[in-house]
Image (cartoon, rainbow, N blue to C red):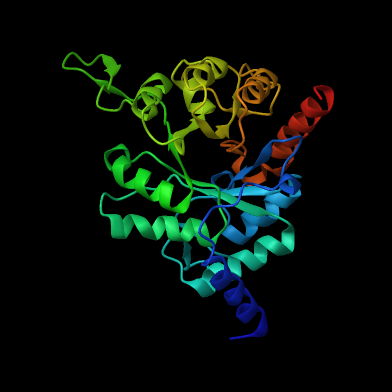
Length: 296
């Protein structure tokens, strides 16, 4: 093991002694907003490349997702909460080199089994993260217990409303999937610990026909993180767009978050122009910087 990996491993072991999650430092924020990238924006690349591209966008935070290939040299190694301390140290060293902070992890399934679920929370704490993102509603009791123990946020993600064909071949809502609706998420978290809330995916909301600001107001006080997207219109068939060029009213979204005292991470999840999205995402980051400068 070379010296760099030894230093990285010592850093990981030190983090293991931390009993509480640290807030996202101001150095990684833009005007109070911890704006950065969801690594899924770069899912055609590796974790190391996603970190490099995040730096190129001008943002300073990243949200990882499970299963991404580690690096061009180690494509067979997958990055997730099963990583050992040496591998975690490698990724932390890469993050430090590029001035990027890992703030969240998901969307990841949280098992009902506490021992298995604990692996996810151990991983998030070792990485110094703010929270984990999931849609595992059936294991919320376990997730809530661990959120309190680790002082980590559990952010419930919402994919778009699902449709299916009825007996007559007509397209109808698949009512077995309810988490798309922010009102439903607000209902299931309202009596939970405040560390249990929503990862507001405003792009999927738009696909489901929900205006971003309306969804945020439904979840007032329970928005813990965002997957931020702008799109040309509501409904299916709309691809992601540079902030300020779509109908999401990103400026209004930022104002609503500020009014709610939002303190979590905003991950730009840009699901368009996959092979060359850095310039587009950089403009999204620039929009946030410009909005902050004009609304101090």
